[in-house]
Length: 143
Image (tube, rainbow, N blue to C red):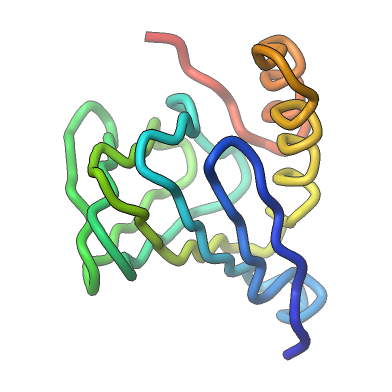
């Protein structure tokens, strides 16, 4: 396994560990590092992949189908495709978790595209963010 680039935006870092080429499209794996108070993903669901999350550091607060779940170090959570979910760092410390997406259709290009919009300066263009999400198989949900 070679070193992968780190993608940074809005108080979040994404460290890709395995991409589709590494796993013959079976899965992708990345670590999320989220600063306290960072604004992160809106409620959404995935059309084409399942996601499994594993807590490494701190407490990530997930909302899955309207239910609040606190993900602590050593905890895991399976989110099937089509399931509405969101996550947040409600703590005063940096949190870290691993994400496994299968099949391996969700790669670093999504985060690079999001970073381009977020890192452009000023308030993020919400229409562009929605377009990026939709182009990568994530469907934002309002409300």
